[in-house]
Length: 163
Image 1 (spheres, one colour):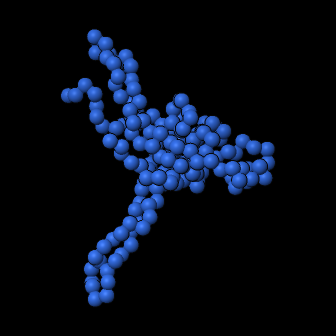
Image 2 (cartoon, rainbow, N blue to C red; image 1 turned 180 degrees about the horizontal axis):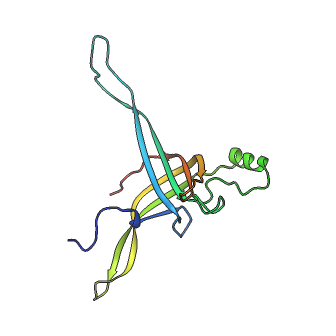
Image 3 (cartoon, rainbow, N blue to C red; image 1 turned 30 degrees about the horizontal axis):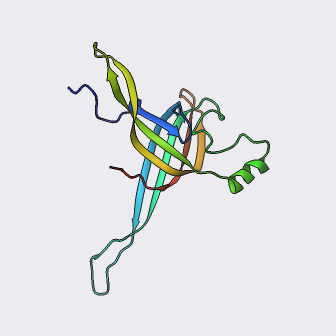
């Protein structure tokens, strides 16, 4: 068996927001979906499509957290609710909304000592979500369950794999 597992697993994931040096805690999952919307080009007298050109791309994300409290749970700074009034919240949302980048890293082995104990790890690149906006936020409290918070939205640039 290989010394280092190659498969991406939840314990290996490190999620950070641009400008933040520590990982986001208490995240249960993150799901990324990119949908390419295509047109149909058939032409008169043709039964089947001849082309399917790309018309747009929609990039969506959603994630769930264990709920601690409403101020400390979720992606920090994405939805600025710590304000003095409804008017401040709405004005900030309309006039000063800022997009964020979300970085997903993969924890990798950096050094191993003579006893085959991992002594240092590195954050390997996995994916970057550029220009992230929030569209939805919710929380749930259920009997016999750990409470959770859900956030979702869109990002503007498709994930690319640089060489």
